[in-house]
Length: 295
Image (cartoon, rainbow, N blue to C red):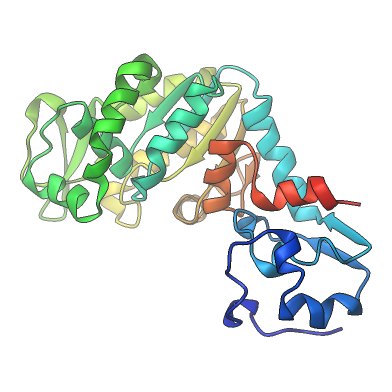
């Protein structure tokens, strides 16, 4: 058994290149002759065509997927390529930069029937639809660079508006206390930190009828107990449904673990960026190399 240092400390690891180019790298030339079988099992990194992931494919006798990779791809194929309907996607969290890509991917290809939204994703969509969230909340979106997506998201809302469900009410932070407001009460000087109870009820009804549910991102700042109700309510709806359910992304998994729902869903994905890219494109660089060289 040979145990290596983290390969990311090697300068050539993170270069994006073809398997053939990587196979001529120092890493592959020095190690490739030492083994016959390469098991690629790092699903969470499968969106990166890096040297240690794809470079050995052209030179080893057998380049195969491991059990984690196999389980992930079976689950993802089920929710993206062949979902039972109704198919509901739930998008939330603070990483809204991929929102437009995911919406266009799963709605444009008619994968999801309905998208439920929460977190900064919902705030950004509400803003793009013309709602004035109030200066503190707009500042958060601006500081993260999300306002650049406004025009694109407005077009997506116009194309798929009836399938993208936005919150009816929101929970704001007033001195550490939760106060719920409806959209007519906007703008607000308080930070929006969760979806409101009426929105949870609405989302629960949608999830109850679903046959497939995919969740990426919590509904609010679940780390603060006052603002975990939205995420908790959505998890409870998923756990109570008969749908095949998949959750993924670091914050989603952390929320599920903290709130006690990690073992109450059908599949917990190890991927963050890899999950988003697969949902958006239906494949990953490492998956394509497995198709080409897998044997």
